Amino acid sequence: KYIKFAKSTDGGATWTISRALDGNKSVIAFTSVYALDSQNIFIASSPDDRDLWFAKSTNGGQTWTTKLVQAMDSTGYLGRWPSIHAVDANTILIGYDYEQTGPTWDTSVYETRFAKSVDGGNSWAITRVDVNNDAAGVTSMDVIGSNNIFVAYAGDRGKGLKFAKSIDSGANWQIQTLYATDDYWSISLDAIDANTTFIAAHDILSPQKVDFAKSTNGG
Image (cartoon, rainbow, N blue to C red; front, top):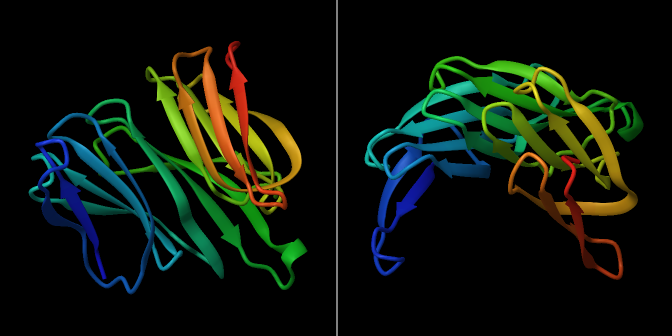
């Protein structure tokens, strides 16, 4: 199993395909891609729900180098629903899900985590965005400049919509609960500038709907 990367330079009329992530991986389930420009392309993926991998191309997707960002150190899941963003060719950010399975649902550990590289993906520093046992992945992230990072994700094991903001490049986080009770499993966040952020989220509870959140004061 492997990730294929498809590229079009004529508006989607034709495509070229390459292998971005290969090796001893039986399942490739969750993937996020970010193109800094036509040459520098970055991918985050979670094979087997167990490890978070990074793939990088500096020649428009012709060839790829890969790096293990973090491996799961216990029973559970890691790297599901990743969201990747690059500030420049060296500074790369990934938001993702971490779940440590306990004897019961209520004793399991749920976190939203954040990985940052400042050397083009060669090494990674891991921090915890939400450590209150109140996150269940489904992550979407955007970055303005090099310091302002915005993350939307599902909380309380899928219940509720949460928003995290960092103004110091991920060193510290401010967390809000936007919706507390609904069940979200598809989330998209887009930040226009440091003040204006939009979030759309699919609520799967009956009747299903799409909720929309907007901030004009930095969240």
